[in-house]
Image (cartoon, rainbow, N blue to C red):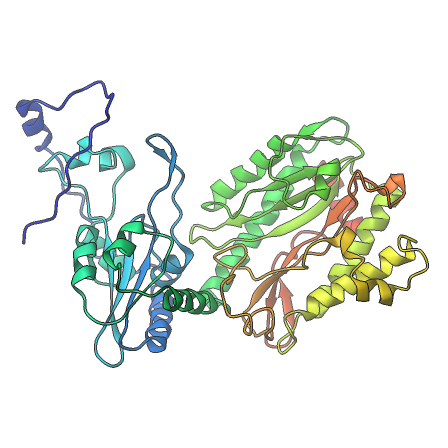
Length: 478
């Protein structure tokens, strides 16, 4: 069979114009065979097989298409770092760009899974060194044979996927928004509402984590704890520390122990801590400030931690800072205590928010109103703003498209992992609170696994109580 080819693309303003016949012939020769043999399947291969079986059972007789996605241009001919779609990675364990998982129906029930991937770039036509994505530019790729051994799946050349999809018969569902070429090949074959239903099912499939995923999240939390310790070591207690230095310090740990950070690090010092998603990190952590650090290491298999600690830059809380911090800690304790199998998902949120309402009311911020009335009217949300947590996994806000009845309106099940992250945020320009409160922001966040008989705090290696935070800072030289 003739292998599919694509024309070599040259830079419009490149310094060279084509190659001589002699150079082309020279570059075809003298390259050692680097094919690897006898490869063992990747650790999650057995898990991905089981996940695909669950997907197959839900959509009998239908062609199912889950793309990895394409690289996105950052500027001209440079791309953003590529990350595959979470559903594709969850179902295959592969992280290749342009990959496509196809589940071909074998009849009224059952599917044959095939992954379409980019093969090794060829030496006989110059692709490996002339193409901008050839192996001498982007690095070696696994061959299709190697990928089959690693993934435990048959693999085909992705350059044939559009033709194969166009020729396939029967009903089709595709995960939209990741590969325009794949969607174009299926134009007039899919329906938006059915594809949306497909996305919802894929998201819900990830609600309960298996042992491989829990191990990944456990490692992510442990690595994140080490990253927080790194930050405490560089934090100046009597000099300013740039937020960018804090961000970069944590990023170094994420790249050493994992793939990347799981989301943009929030290194929010002083009044920046009152902005929930402060990711500009252009300020300074000054002595006397609080530093709100919200960060997570993403593992090499793309599972992320999501942890927040609020640290006194000087190593000691002021009395007011400690009062606010201890109120948030008390709320988090109430929230974590509500995480258990069979509990409503929202229980932990209500428990934490009610505790915050009690504290805010006791400080006289709502006049003569009782805490019950404040909570009923939602007035506490002026200072607490956000929900108390979310699902966690291969996405930092995991399972976001799952069915509401199974998620926020559902019950907690063993194997679910969620964050518990209450906070109090007094905006610098809020004239309804005493001046000394303004600019104080505190959040404490941990990653909680629902167990058979309760819960486990996966990020418990990092101290949470205010006295422990101070002791830890002193012990690490912060």
